[in-house]
Image (tube, rainbow, N blue to C red; front, side):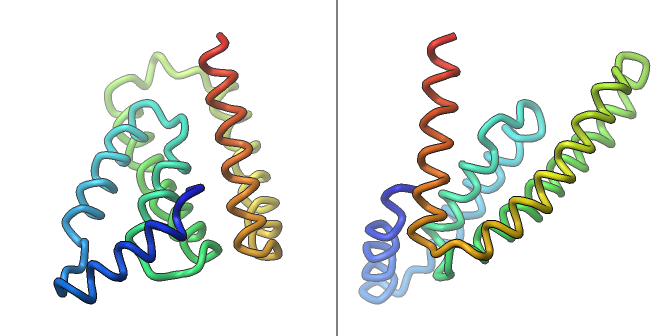
Length: 139
């Protein structure tokens, strides 16, 4: 996410010089992020934002919206699968709390994300991601 503008310029130059579109790399990356996100979920949004931001010629707000749709599809699919194979092991209070928190966070985040300038949104994403990595590694 932090180096997305440079990578976008590199990919754009590559597209123009070789007529390549980067499609298979993007689809492979999204597939990998979906598999990872369906099982684990942590940082799935950062992975998708980075992939989509690098390979799509679009602003960060639209990439963020697409990331939310893709993450919703991944999480919905995983939820259906977990319901089918582990219904009796689900802690429904946790499901309720996560559902409410995710819904509120999605509405607040979408509203804030649309109002921020792309450089500021990128800065927030990098800072939050860096703090999460440090916290995860620090234990």
